[in-house]
Length: 175
Ligand code: SF4
Ligand code: SF4
Image (tube, rainbow, N blue to C red; front, side):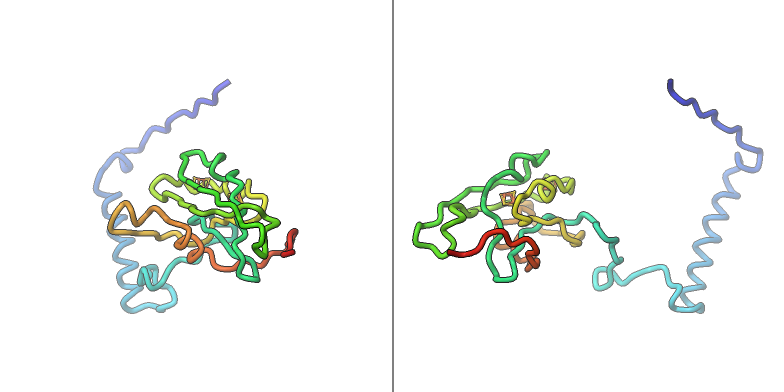
């Protein structure tokens, strides 16, 4: 059963255009004088992009790839994130590790890993599904570029943005 919310009748004062307009100007003027003469801690603007708003814990910014504390790529190219990504923003080309490699136990690694940030909807499914805790949505929210190609992040860019994330589980080791 849908809930119908009755629209309230506006008063004559509310129906006039100018009171609302003047109230808006009053707020702008208040902030203007507060910034000029008031306590500077109360300023309401930031010098963006040098200053940025702090984001809350768990904020979902750009997806990135991370290395563990030994500098090792955590991704094992299982392609689960590629499969689950709703807008198909992820493209992975797995490569096979040679049998004499130090970490050959893992078998696969991402030869190519791309995330198309023009498609990404910041849903976080890739982070949730990853069995290796290799992909994280971090706090970066201001990604810009001069071309569409710049916003297709390759493996190098993804690791650059991701950095190192301490691995608490560390379920596999080198041979
Ligand atoms: S955050 Fe969502 S849309 Fe973006 S890459 Fe991950 S799964 Fe795809
Ligand atoms: S980031 Fe995680 S889910 Fe995606 S391919 Fe690598 S290991 Fe698999």
